[in-house]
Length: 466
Ligand code: 5AD
Ligand code: SF4
Picture (cartoon, protein in one colour):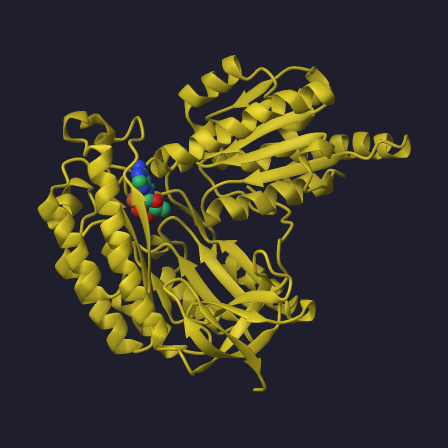
């Protein structure tokens, strides 16, 4: 569905816009506050929420106290993320007391489950509406309804199974952007909630993706990340490698990245296309391993073995000797023994990832692994394994980063580094985080940084002339 061509949605958008225009005329500007939790896909959704809110005449604020519309874009992938979101939703009670006209919308993965929606309905009376990820584009509709009917709405299951097009996007950065190429996931890894909350895989038409990337590049964007839960199973009139070929053919000075990949779907052709376009394709591959034990991988329904995984790593490195590799690891999946965990550490030693995002297994109700209570790994054992994994990975990452000491790297400057107004940070083509002194005008620009020092997580240096 293209929302620009949907009369009902456009009508709702216009109605809310008109109301906000009248309010502004009467001296009451309406503000929207948006908080996003979780993954890049959610960040991209947050940019759409903001785009739609701005199209309806809301002005963006980073201060929740000032808001008339609060949109909380939640994550459900681990319990910790859900608890954090619930606590922030709880804060809205006080804000509503202060501003009785405040509309609180809870969006994102948490709101795709009936159980959570019921909880929000009953336990959080100041939540005005919920909107699951597949129905994100219906924001104007739900807002219009809650305003007109003066009652709460909980939208669930209205998804028509298609990727919505034409949704306005308010981009956070001009120089760096996310472009969703597909939504949902069909893989059903046994620990993962994503297929239940984001639905089945839907790929966008390649023509629309190409047009969006082209427009971004023409607008000065230098670094574009193609997003999907499993980009390697992208399928429209072409496959993922085919889509990359089309994008690589676009003119301009920009880099293409993508995430996330599933090892079972990485094709030789994808590696070939990456290697063929070294100036266009970022030399970085994020390839979640999840566990180094074949027994656990099978229990996770990952459908590959460590041998298969190592084969991909070899082919990637043969095709692109400087490729950086990053991964996700889950520690303490139900039934994980010390031997299984040792196999994971062994894989880290063999592959030598540049960076690993490690997670403590978190049971998600409704997923098969969460049923295996008798096999749950005790928290103290999980914690201890987690620390060992971090210590080993820190050593490996430090060694990997030390390779860059003394080298001069091209870096796209992103923002001020936390806590120091003279320090800026950016990323290299390979995705390495770099900190260096600079000034505001460096943001969005490529600079050359001579690396003086490395730590396990970042490189530190100073700008030099090209
Ligand atoms: N518990 C812990 N980590 C999880 N992930 C997904 N589901 C869970 C879970 N239930 C991790 C996986 C995935 C990453 C985005 O989050 O490693 O790759
Ligand atoms: Fe979750 Fe597996 Fe799909 Fe990734 S591939 S979103 S881990 S089910």
